[in-house]
Length: 82
Image: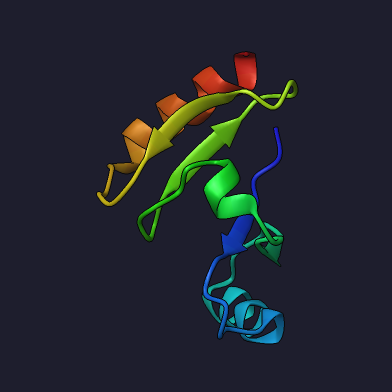
């Protein structure tokens, strides 16, 4: 399973995301959303979390909201077995 953080702010540059990633000691890669990605995946709010399987099918979607570490572990466990 691969995890990516994708920036959607058209005014934010990739180098700023990379700096933030390093400052927070995040291990996952960061990228900027390609043109058309937000409407293609029907992303309409900030902080949307989307899991996409190897076939390109969305298997999880959530907008705003926080989850406990245990909930995220369970979700990643389930997604990695799909």
